[in-house]
Each structure stands twice: as C-alpha cells, then as structure tokens.
Length: 609
Image (cartoon, rainbow, N blue to C red; front, top):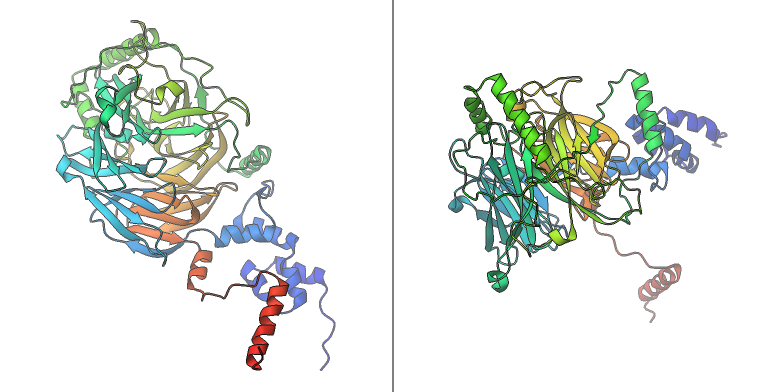
C-alpha cells in the first residue's frame, strides 16, 4: 500500500512545540523527517524557555553549543540521582570537604570523628579509608575540615567539651601521608572555623572581651607544623586585630585568591539579567534587597595581647549559627550580664566603643581594596569573614587584604610596628547583607562569593543589639563579585529554614563551574544553575541538610550531609546510565582501520590468511 504525502515540516514543528520534551524525543524516532524536526534549534529554544521558566531576556549560556544540548545539560547532567548512602557516622554529620584532586573527601560529625573517604574506586563506590576520634583532646565534636592546596595536610576544626558558657574551639592539622597529628591551634570562638592561607600556614582566631558588648578579635597566622628550624623561626604571627561592637564577633573566615588575569567560570550578561529582573518586578514579584556597600575609615592599634583564656566568658558570644541542640549559651550569658545594666549604660558603652574605635584604629589604605575591571589591577589575596555592627547576628561581610609579606610567620610575632595610638586594624571593605548570614562559599576561580542569608524585614530599625529583627524562613543566596566588590545577581531562593535568630543552623554551600548547591533546614539539599539562576533539583534527607560538596574534578558528583547521620552520594542521570550500560568495544579511529578490521574478520571466517 503506497503511503500518502507526509506532513510539511512547519506543521510538524508547530505540533512538536506543544508537546513535552520527552514526547518530542520519542516522536523523533518515527521517521527521518520527524527526527530532523525534533532537533530543530527554534523548537528547543521554545522548549527550553517554557520548561525551565526562564525570562526570555536572559540569553543562552555563551559556552552552549546549541539549545538542544543546553536543555540536555540542565536535564541530564545534574547530580540528582542517589547512588549510595554512607552510614559510618553515628551522629549528625556537619561538614564535607573534597580534596583539590577529587580523589578523597573528609567529613565531620557530632560523633567527634573526622573521616576520610576514597572517591576513586574503579566501581565508582565510596569507601572509608580512615577515621580519627578527637575525644582524647576534650573535643565535643568536629565541625569543619579543609585540605591544603597540595592535598598533603587536613585542617580539622572542632568545639571543646567545656563549660556551659564556653565558646572555645581548636584546630588540628593531620598529615595525609600517615594520618598523624602534626599540631593543634587554639580557636576562639569556635565558629571562626579556621582556614588555609597557603600550603603550610593556617588562620585561627582569638576573642578578648573589653566590655559587656565590646570585644576584640585577633586573627593569627600559624605554621601547620614545627620542624627543626622552628627553634629560631616563629610558628605564629598576628595578622589583624579588629574591634567588635554591639556584641558582634568575627566568624567564618576564608581566603580568596583573586587573580588579575582570569577567565571567569561564570559568564554573565548583566544587562539581560537587569532587564529580566525589571520584567519580573513589573509582574508583581517582590523586589529583592540590594545590599549596601561602604568603607570603614578610622584607625588601628596595637597592644600586648593577653594570652590567658577568658573562660569565664564575660559576655562570650557563642555562635548562634550552629546547631539547635547546642543552646546559644554565650548569648544568654551576655543577656544575663546586661540585666543589671540599664539602657543608658549600654548606650554609653556603645558610644565609648565607637569613639575609641574611631580614634585608635589604623586608617585604611584606599588602594588596598579597590574595585577593578577584568584584566586590570594585580593579584590580590583577601581574607573574608562574617561580622556585624548593629547586633550579634552576623549581617556583614568583612574584607581584609593580605599582603605578600604577611604570608609567612617570619618577622615579629605581633606583626608590623605601629604607633601607640593605633590599637585596632580597620576593615578594608564591608558589604551589608541586611539579614542573618548562615553560610558562605567561593566559586572555583575565587571570583564570586556566594552567601546564604535569612533576610530582615525591609526598613527595620535595630535599637537593641541583643534583640535583632526577626528573620525570614526563606534563605536567600546572594552572589558577590570580588573584583567589582558588589552584588551582581538577584538572590536565589528555594530553600527554607525555620529556627529563630539565636538558634540558626549554619548551612554550608558549595559551588562548581556551572552549579551552586546548598543544604537547608527543610530536609533537602538544593542545586541551582549559576547562569540562569534557576533551581534544578531537590535532594531529600530525613533531617536537616548541613553541608553539600561537589567533586572539584566532576561536577556531576555531589555529596550531602545531614542530621540524619548519613552522607548521600548523588550522580547525574547521564553518569548513572553510563555506569549501568554494558561496556562497548572501542571504536576504530578512522574509516581505513574499520575497513581493514572487517576484511580481516571476513578472511578469518573463510579460513584465509
């Protein structure tokens, strides 16, 4: 029976536009004509914008080859398929960190162990390589870990099992050659966490209280281990000494190496993004808060640091961004100490602290931190941390530039010489987030800083530093360009949190080349695309998700850690299919080798040489 004339391509295309993408792919298998139409660029552009609900003013990713491949990337290359659950921890898992080579990762937990896992087994499964308990050092739990740049040392940050009002912690350095403990460094408060500055030096903190609401944070540079020359060379040196007012403290330190010549892993079209934001606002979407940027100017100063531990914690601000089952005892202690102090007394202390800071803080150098265009300026190393000026809730990002001569512990222990009038170091730059910051993460190229925050009400006024504004249940994910020193993208929003100000969870996030992921209190992890600002996947757990981590060598592998005591391993649908498909014989390199192999096979079947 002869077949009639086929439908014109224009009509087939019109039909396909109204079909789901899966139906289009299946229909394309019917015949050659339909297959050709099912790969039409206009078709996949329409399917792309409608399926992912992206404003049409946002352009396709500049690195994308076609609309079809870009649709497939967002649909098929997201690590959203659970392939393994690790249950070796016996309590809440708080943090995950990959090595720079991606061959292993570490995990920290309330069971007070740090575990190191093998991520390079031939079968693709994750296995435990080593576990170290820190109970013998009087730790309550391990909370954070980080590999140094050459993956030879592991920094482990923990919390002391101390008095009720204590906020003291410690940093341990473990050799990855034989898992021996090389050094231990005091860290106070413990939510400074600590971080590597380079292969052999790490940064820790110490806190000294000056009044009920006023304190001083000293950030120290420590050598990771002591060798033979250490008898004549310092193993510790003070980096910065910063005044804290209104019960705030410095927390969550991290180092960003901003390169002069770089190829950003996030390619933005700012004009298109602005147009998309304006269109969204015209359609009734709520306007996101734009953070303020301002510089602090004043003075700095030096004094003989009191090395004695103030374990009576006079107003010690225990990080309220940890875990709810650890009550914010530091906050309560400050409140207790203020019960006898009236409002006038607190206001007087704040005025005195601001006056002392303005007169005895080293004047900032405006040339140290200046916004620069790509390819301009010079390589810069920044120390980033959360801080505040209005209340104990961390609501600002502080930035200090670290100069080349500060990269080593050589020189005076107390750092550079200062005049007697310079007591504190000034902050080089401050970014106000207008909300409670609960997590930060750097992009792989250190160009962008991603910040988890829970917003304050618009227009709120803080009159009491111990009574911060209520915070939103929605978590906003801000993106800050460390070259221009401003927020470049509208906030991402999908994940949620429910605890109040003084019981906030710290939610660790991670960033890969194309994606950003974060945990949440709603028992899910989330993955967004960095270019399109869309949420692509929700990763389910049975309790709060505290941390996520992408493999630095394969962004289609993601880990998530939860209060349900498990670590889940997620891979993309594409990788799962590849792992399940039978191995195929290698393809011949060219047509000639293919013909020769066929001829040889035929000769063998016919018994010919």
